[in-house]
Amino acid sequence: MSDVRIMTGNQAAAYGVKLCKVQVVSAYPITPSTSVTETIANWVERGELKAEYVRVESEHSVMTVCVAASTVGARTFTSTSSHGLLYMHEQLHWAAGSRLPIVLACVNRGVGAPWSIFNDQQDSIAQRDTGWIQIYCRDNQEIIDTVIQAYRIAEQVYCPVMVCYDGFVLSHTMMPVEIPDADKVGEFLPPYKPHTILSPEDPRNINPVIFPWQRRDAEGVLRDGYMDMRWKLQHALEGSRNVIVEVCREYAERFGRDHGGMLWTYKADDAEVLLAGMGSIATEATTAADLLREGGIRAGVVGVRVYRPFPRAEVREAFHKAPAIVVFEKDISYGYEGALSADIKAALYGTGIQTPVHNYIAGLGGRDVKANELAEAVRSSLAAIAGGNREQQTWLNCVTEL
Amino acid sequence: MEPKDDNISAMCKPAVGEAGKTGDWRDLTPVIDHAKCIASVKNRPACYLCWLYCPDGIVSAGIPVKIDLDYCKGCGICAEECPAKAITMAVNEEVKK
Image 1 (spheres, rainbow over the protein chains, first blue to last red):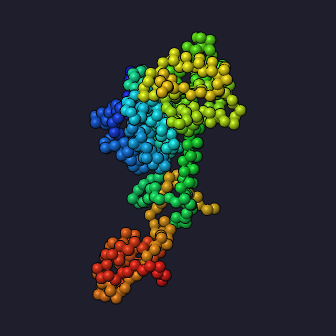
Image 2 (cartoon, rainbow over the protein chains, first blue to last red):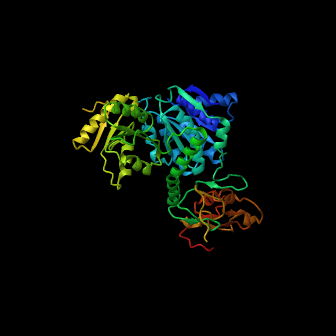
């Protein structure tokens, strides 16, 4: 018996949190993420979710609450956007460095200055190097399913997970969403076991000063230095790929929905050009691919679902046959190019894949991106590639003359 | 085989010497003149403000008062607080352990 309801992306995220029986939620409201924790706060107040809802004065404090609660063994959640996420930045490092399986819903929004409340992915891309796993969702069903998967992944590899989805495009758009059965979610997601048990009988200093070198503790055990500890985090993220893929596969078996593990493809097998993107712009690209195919161009799409850890092997596999790659993304690494484009090119290095890669920066601060505009961009890129232009950066629908 | 550090985040158990012999951080060394120390002079438990104020907890409240120079970082708070002026901070004092 399926329970399908019409809901926004933010409600979908909240339902995922409820199904995971999250014990501590802390949040500070910010558009467009506010209604995630607003919905949860309502459930907590009515007694429908037995959780502690901690109100604080800033997002920085939000993440410290999550860090503390997760350290003592509570399953924790928060959501935020844009400047809220940036304000958390320092504590995001602390959460990852402390190896805490916190799940955060990042409702993607542009970053000031100047002010914008509208969608792009600059906020979460700017947190790329904090040691968090980042998963980008393409629709509301994927949001609820990914929140549930995120706790399984996080609590298995002891790394925090950021579930990212586009503000307004998904957060405030209603779609039919199947709510998984609570008992089945309980079977899928075992209780959280913290990696270290804190108790008065066995006191510990958590995160003391750690030196550049290894050193012996009072019991004579050789303890890690800073760099050894950092390597463990890198090793955990690299190793989380297998866990992410396995969790996604098991989820598909139990719940009948497979969102693609590290990445997903659409009509990619015979494609003469592959469109790539993350989140809702990749969904838009599938419509563009259909338009292109109607016009006789065999286009396909690669949607990068997990951005960190980066799906190196899957990207190589997905692009190895394509004669042309066009990357659409809602972020810019100022002074270089789009972050996804740079990472895709880096993954292809040394493989012998010599495919031209064109990069479109699109939809910053909510600027509209239509499927036919993506299709037109691909057509112009194919013409440029035919003319020998192997690398190109274009700002779509943007005034680029001074 | 040598036990490996199996912690995935940095932590330690509170223990004497957990951070090594921190006394070697010291520039100035406290020297107690027991002829002035109130506890020694009165020969009974008294004063012990040095014990109370020491931020590292390495002053023992006996007669005479002792400072554990393995861990004393030489901050000088004991000398500052001593009402009898019995403690002086010696420069480059070669310490009798």
